[in-house]
Image 1 (tube, rainbow over the protein chains, first blue to last red):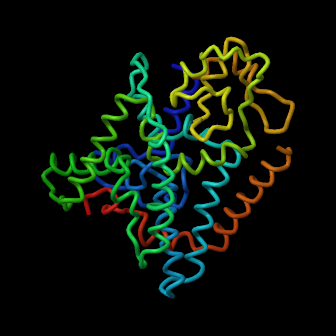
Image 2: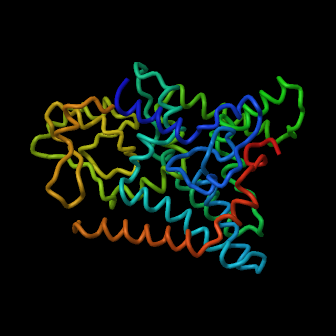
Length: 297
Length: 44
């Protein structure tokens, strides 16, 4: 097992310690749920201890709308700064690093996708869809629809909620014959959307991250200012294409080391010319040489 | 880019986080909606 895979497994287990809840059909509701985890991990997943930043941001921004209309106290609206701060801080330190190393749903996609498969190129415009989801579903609708607004991205799009929470809860519910959940059009819609993403994830590496993840979109924008940065020695780089061949999001890192698509998995640090390194932005210190000799991807 | 620019971003983000954490009522937001959102996962 590589170092990155080991960290992904550890993060998935740390973020989801209440695994017996899958069997019980219950969801952890303790105060640890106040903690936003650095990754897309549905807070309605039975095993989750913390809250998904994207789900939390929608709820928090809806409370800001409620504050404008006088339905919510200022202190409740201020809590949205906590959620925004978590997202901004993780991105400001390391950009999309959490996508590549910590996000449980990213890990799930890595498991689904077979590496030996011939890469399928995505048209450029598809990559912009995640910004639309971020702007419209995560920020716009909670802020502009009357309070209280349902978390629109979670409710209508997010396959993580269906795969990590909805489907397992319904399965256990049916097996136990409890019949405690309401299944209708919304569930059918969510399963259909999840099925489309699942097919995409099987055929295209990190399909959801690249096309629809609003958290990845936010962190991707911070790739260009994050403290940790990837650097390419353009003199040493021979443009051999190695970096693109090992890249899960199919980019040539030498073209733009701060690309918003880069999930900072660091696979490209194994560059045969040693041209790709990672270090603090604006600093002479380099991490790449150590990583180069370590199995990181 | 100047070395201090990323640091400014990190510090500003940390300030935003801490203001929300200490001045905001985080429990009120989660208590209302995010503890268990069955509608969010299509089964509520």
